[in-house]
Length: 135
Image 1 (cartoon, rainbow, N blue to C red):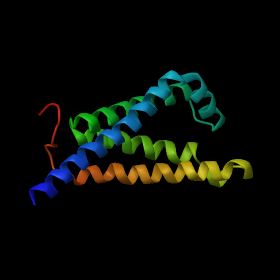
Image 2 (image 1 turned 45 degrees about the vertical axis):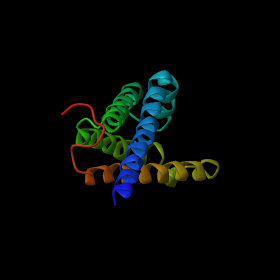
Image 3 (image 1 turned 180 degrees about the vertical axis):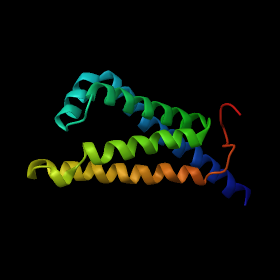
């Protein structure tokens, strides 16, 4: 039983690190490529695209850091849920894409839906999280 609990603990921590780094890398890319991302967001008719990209990068940063550090995970989950609910239907609207882009947008839409589901599952983990920073 103890070995099983240890495996689950290590699996949770490893999964948390991988999940967080995905979001932190995405946040970094939002800021590093702000102008290119804003240009693409503008092509999708996003109002104030530069501000929207910066804002979505901040949500990714908050969510990624919160999950990585185990610090106030509900806030991190909320930031990522806001990101996915705001970005997914606007930026990956496969139903409105031309035939050459439809498959690409559908894959990204479904990836985001899966990540949204995984994000919500973090709410099922009792607090305080193991190996956390802060209270």
